[in-house]
Amino acid sequence: MKPLLIMLLSIFLTKGINLKAQCTIDYTQTQPGIYPDTLPDGMVGVGFMEGMTFVMPLDTSGFDFTNFYIQTVSGLPFGLSWQCNSPGTNCNYNPQTNQHGCIEIFGTPLQAGTYPIDVSIVATLNVIGDIPANFYTQVVIQPDSSSNMGFIASGTYGCSPMTVSFTNNNPGMAAYNWGFGNGTTSTQENPAPQTYTSPGDYVVNYEAYPAGSSSYFLTNIEVVDADGWSGDLDDGFGSLSPDPYIKLLDQSGSVIYTSPVYIDQDFPVSWPISNILLQDQSYTIEVWEEDGFWTNDDFCGSLSFQGFSTSGTLTGGGETVNYTTSVVNAGLITSSDTIHVFDTPNTPNIDFLGSELWTDSLGFLLQWYQDGAPITGATSDSLLATVSGDYFVLSSSLEGCFSSSDTVFVVVCDTAFVPSITQNGNMLYTSASSFDIQWYQDGQPITGETNETLLNISEGEFFVELSSTDGCVYVSDTITVDFSSIDEGALSKASFVIYPNPTKGAFTLKLNGVGSDPLTIQVLDLSGRIVFNKEVTAINQSLEQMIRFNSLAGVYLVRVTNNNQSIQRKLVVN
Image 1 (cartoon, rainbow, N blue to C red):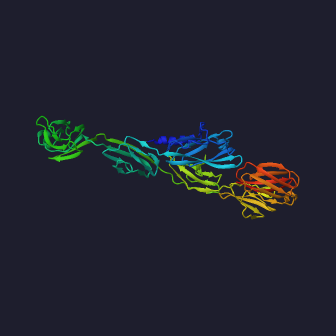
Image 2 (cartoon, rainbow, N blue to C red):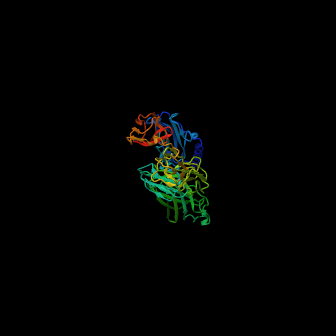
Image 3 (tube, helix red, strand yellow):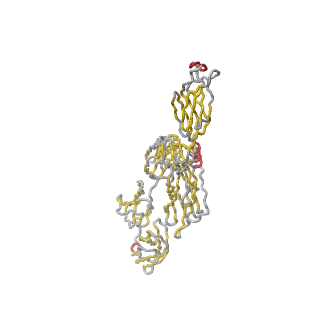
């Protein structure tokens, strides 16, 4: 059983550890992944500190990873937090500089169970951009337990209502007697789990009785009343108090004990006896009254009892005698332990307005959570949310008892964000891979135009509306498209064909009706990055060019420019 003082020190020390938690990288790991894949077991109420090393890959499919960002670690048991070994960079890592990093899991777990842990990262690839990824591990938190000669209690320290299981360490005995301190008793070898609904300390008593004979000891004799002593001169013919004493005789009539004499002592009187071992036979208690010079001692009477018997009262012939025995069972096992049950805080209230959250659960230790992960340093009664997500607050007592509030979804929109639009000839482009997109022309939504690229546009006023999954809506500035200033030359009137389309990376570009000026052929991905560039010249106003480029599956633009003119087509790569 862990004393309460040790538990409290553990909690305070853990909070001190939180500020300095630092993991150690295991450089023996060389393959990309997270190590270990399963954390060592923890125990409720015991400080926990374990590191996880991760090895980042350098590249994939020939493209380099340029950054890994540890976004969050979710699924941790209540009471545990995490910290990366690079908090100064906000947990961003460049694998080209160092492939290794680590996370420290630390705190004092408050609840037993098996907890799958999800480490969410964002990997940046120099061609594709940001790619979300997840690594998984788990930790098992065991209930605190206490063991003694008699039994094991699975949890002697907990919060109401608390259920405790008991394991008997002495199976196969003749009889058992359990007292659980909550008003429940049992004689079963393996009793049912006990539930303690109210805070307090509950003493559990255990007795196991082996098969075999018991030993009986005589420990006290009390003469409550006796007659036959007041008829002579030494006793004043009944006007004086008696001088009683007793004799104990075995079955053969031998005196095995004679008590001291009490002078002038009225009944009742008793004599403590130093544990006379009794046998399985009859014993006789004789009551005597001592006389002096003139007469012999008075015999008041006798009563008998069985040696192998429990304490009892004997009456007869004017005498009343109580005798006390102590029964010692051979090999009797007795044990006890104490169950400490503490009060569970009430469920904390949670309110929010806009991005500000608060709780009225004062007087407890508080920890705010976002999307299932504790927010570092968020331990006051209010919180200003910086990103959209699910929020709740955990309220815990010094003893480690806790309760959590309801979960609320808070929407936080970036008021400074304005989507940008890029025009390239008769194409508009916005970078918005994580948003729902809707293009507008002259104030009206364009049916079906919900991609990042808007092709084959006509003149007019355009803007784009981006909607996030959490309900935020962002609107770009309006741009005006006017083709009147573009010189209509041969390139704008040329026949422009690319095939096959879709392709697996190689295609043919065919132009007819172009001049003799040099032409520039470019292939661009949707982020505007040029993945192919070549200058060519048409012969007899015609051009046929085979083009190959290393590409990932996606949508590309094939653009031909001549001076200040350009034409383009969309290319799909499977």
